[in-house]
Length: 235
Image (cartoon, rainbow, N blue to C red; front, side, top):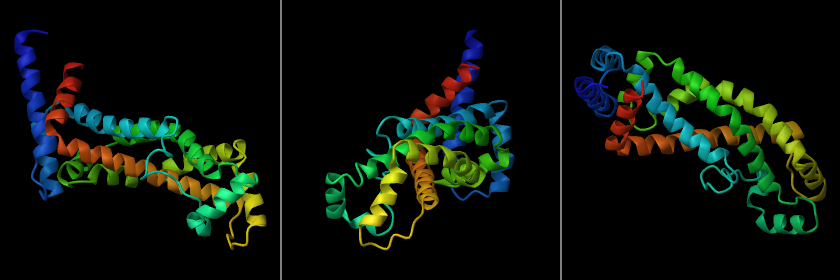
């Protein structure tokens, strides 16, 4: 790349970082939507790449072995009265009623996370400048809320059958049914209810992880600017 082109791209990257992270909070979305395209020129894909990169980082972290279990915010507890019945669960594990049921729920969520990346990537690809303006000026959580609004239902629909299969493969639904028959607690849950519970908790965990990545991104504009510049120079 010629020196002049490098300088132009560098300046564009710096300008893009200013727009992406430096627009004043509270700027009306309609006004921001006018400012952003003019300021960014043809570099809109770099903004999407930055947001997509944050979502990828969150999903990669949760999708690896132990991703949900090792994350205090994403870890899925047993539902209902069992949530606080730690002593009871230690006993049921020993007698073979649960056999690590809590870990099975988290492993199911971990396996289902694989479908989230293409869902989020489509949400990024479909993002309009009005959407981008809302994210840039909306403050902490705006990008995460965009994903919730644009991809939440689709994500849940795609994750549920994977969660159901993972629970069955791990024997979690069988263990849970045995547990409900063996302990004096009014759980009132079917296998389908358990699948819905884990799916909802897994979806929430994904968005919590996304929110953490977004917060880190907004807190480090220098790093974000470098990411933007890299996206530009790789075009």
